[in-house]
Amino acid sequence: MRHVVTGAGSGIGLALAHRLGDRGDDLVLVARSTARADELGRTFPRAQLLVADLADPGTLNGLGRQVDGEVDTLLHVAGVVDLGRVDRLRLAEWEEQIAVNLTAPAVLTRELLPHVRASHGTIVFVNSSAGLTANAEWSAYAASKFGLRAFADALRAEEVEHGVRVSTVYPSRTATPMQEKVHEQEGRTYDASRWISVDTVVDTIVHVIDLPADATIPDVTVRPVVPRPGT
Image (cartoon, rainbow, N blue to C red; front, top):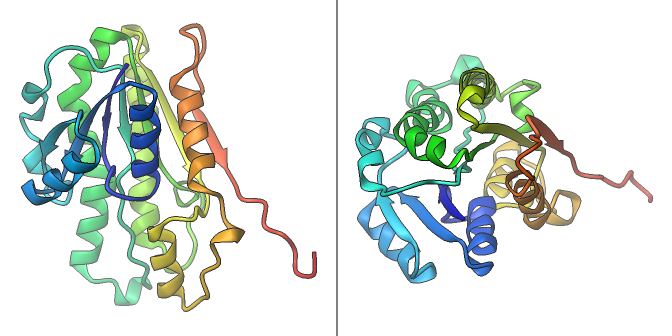
């Protein structure tokens, strides 16, 4: 199988790329800069590297021409988060989260759609529980993820006639560097043992993309089992 993966530099994306590469699958990884591509190339020497900055979605234009042949899965894993109240929300923070979390996946999907159609492949959006429920101080991030959910739903309806499966995975809090940053912004102590492991989320994604051709999982939510105090 051949997979295009964003966000392979850390967290869920890194673990997913390792899982797929270790089983012998071909990887095409998107890196935000040439320097980042060099780093990823040392970690994944067999991978094809594409340079584009998701924070600047225009750099994705034409990326599809750099990929030859079919793509079995397109895996949108990259994301950014900055918490903040609406009355203190800076425009730059809003724009970056919308660009990386929503606009870039939309543009990259458009670019690679012919390759995924050719294989009757699968597109997976790694969303967030924030794409289902918006809480205080999560307005920009949640808006980007609600938008990503809508985009995936529309894409699914459009692409069924082409045999392309579209799935959204909604992980709740997962033990990643991003989650550590969120805890810091919230002023809370980070305890990775309380949250979903990266491997559990990767297991879910791999299950979705490995389904036989007669079935699809449009949406799946992964939640942590957080022990109650004193248990």
